[in-house]
Image (cartoon, rainbow, N blue to C red; front, side, top):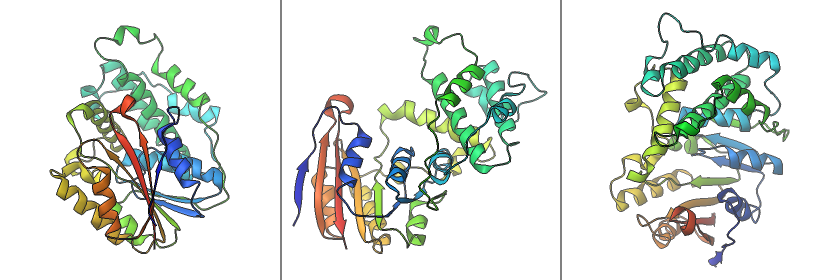
Amino acid sequence: MQSQVNLNTGSMSWLGFELNVLRRLKFKSAGLPLTGEPDLGHYLKRWDVRVAANDPAEWAWTKSMAFIENNSEVLTEDDVELILADAYVPGNFFRNASLVSWFNETDAWWFDNVRANIEKLQSQYKRALALTLGMAVGDYVFSFNLETRDLRQPLSLTNVFRRLWRSLPPPVNNRQRNISTNQSARSFLAETYDTDLLFLRLPHPPRATDSRNTRVISWREEWLRQSRTSLDTIPQNRFAATVQTKEQYLRSVEDLLKIASHVPLWAVAGISDGFVSSDELVETIAEARRIEAVYTKDFSDLLGLKAVIVTAAA
């Protein structure tokens, strides 16, 4: 029987909402086909859950490798010295010329040199951690605009990197073989047969108000890929990026759920922001599988939307 549970405590974060729902379910392994930020998978490891994380975007895959797949490796002081060596020294040419379209020349040289230095690290997990820190430095730069750039502290990006390194959370070792992949959600779901739970965090089509977030994600991809691939050819991190209508969106959801029919337990997370309603999402999921519960949380005051998580079992 379907139940409706309203979780409306104002202090609960988005991650807290997801964890509040998941702790009600019984599972030992979880598949995340559209991981995005790795916070949920990183936390599930604390529950000794084996996590299979995936995202078509390289920035998200890199973070998942650093915090979900990685169980024990950390960056040492020697690693950081190697990463930051001659970071501000200009070369004869930019390895990644696109950086000058994102940053001033001084910052662009820093990101170009640091990216090259990171490749000298021997461990893929150390490289992922270093790239994650580099993305965080970029987030710091992009947190200022023309009106607020005077507030940017007179810190070199090297010092920002070091501060972020010192605040990195320690790795969580759940003694499991966690994995992270860089595939489409469809491919990941078709190849994942050994997980108890599917946690599908549905995206929503981009809006004009998402322009800053899109810009930040775009620079991350160009920095990680070193402009070796046109952004137009990069698989979208959000399968709804090309969706134009509500009907197309719901058909995309239905298609993913059909591919995931072999996973015993589903938790499908979506948002209701005027494009697709919670009722329409629930109806689509109900056509594929019996629904066990529907959980909602109102984020209207902060984000102008409502969150919903639908659980369903085979």
